[in-house]
Image 1 (cartoon, rainbow, N blue to C red):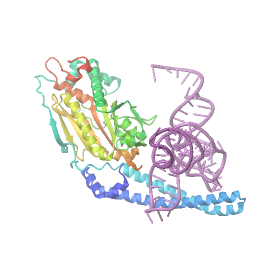
Image 2 (cartoon, chains in turn blue, cyan):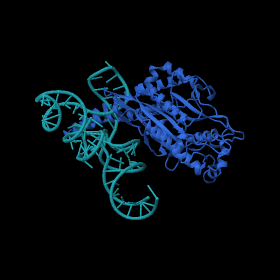
Image 3 (tube, rainbow, N blue to C red):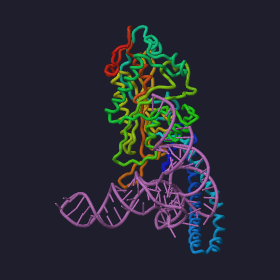
Image 4 (cartoon, rainbow, N blue to C red):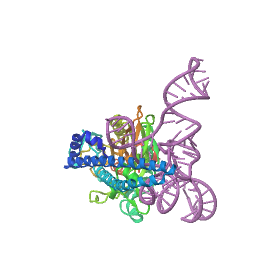
Length: 423
RNA sequence: AGAGGAGUGGCAGAGUGGUCGAAUGCGGCGGUCUUGAAAACCGUUGUACCGCGAGGUACCGGGGGUUCGAAUCCCUCCUCCUCUGCCA
């Protein structure tokens, strides 16, 4: 969440930034926060000085009791019961103010980076790069949902039987292809300096708040009511939360992690005719890269991460483009996001396969993730993450783009992982 | 899952109602000594909020309560350990 001090110091920039997200009452919102913070301060000052008085009386009583002067002790007790009542009320008032303030801040999204274009929907995202040739397909080329049936490598009906729609079963070469991609992506991440982690795929409420899925996206996560736990929508949540309530030393930086997990998304309200096959699922596999950086390095890190994703896409020979997300399409917690889309030739559609974001201090402030600089001062760090990459749409594009009359060619870099070069 | 025990500063570990933000040891940092290092000795060493500052407040697993006063007593939740049971 945003820091009140920064809201005060950079109010104009914040208002301009939030307006790019189409928050028309940005100024009003920020003013409310500032006002709440002021009453927080004054209430706390009052409470603190009352507490100081109460503490000092309590000490006096202690001293008097020791000297056996019980009568005198009893006399000054009167004031303390008065203070006690007063402080109870002040304490409740302060808690109320703090809760309001936190709620307000929870519901204000991150301020976009200056380079983020204004815009309302994904139509307004700006294409900044396009790489690779769109393949020409043979006559009778099929979309991946038909190809998987023909070759019997992914079975939606079986998934529906055992779980429900959006939970496919990968079989034979399909299962092997998916595992190959996971291993390939992880190996490439490790080569690029990311250390591998295998986190839990179920997280508690505190973790959900730490990275900002809660309260913003509560309805989008599967919830285990009995234990109050959530199935992760992305490995970003457990991996970034490894650093919740952590103060790092300068020499621990940068932090770079890669992890493979299944991801679970309820996708409430986002189903329709345009979403077929592997294009949108409730459960899918993804390799995620996460970085924790010093503020002054974070945008360079963002470039590194984008370069890594580009490397993966071109090594798989997939045509891709990079989009700079506009204010309206930017994720709640992000300051700047680049989306990577591959062209899936038989559908004739661009499919998002990666999203690389810099959250600046927005998550770190919730996480209380800091480092100590040379002056032993605590500095909030910047967090970043990116998909490297989400599997099903990559598989869809590989199947569609590499098909010929008799089968599908597997990209060369995967051969040693799949053990076969054709389906 | 049942029974019992325990959660204190970076770590270890004292503290069972007042002067305890907290002994002591280790580690860390600074210094003295030394050609250098080690040892020894001296000093220092948590986080957050408020305040120009002096300073004040809060935090001894989380939350609540008792009391003039809580690390210490009570309730509750969480976590860990031991034994029994179950199990990949």
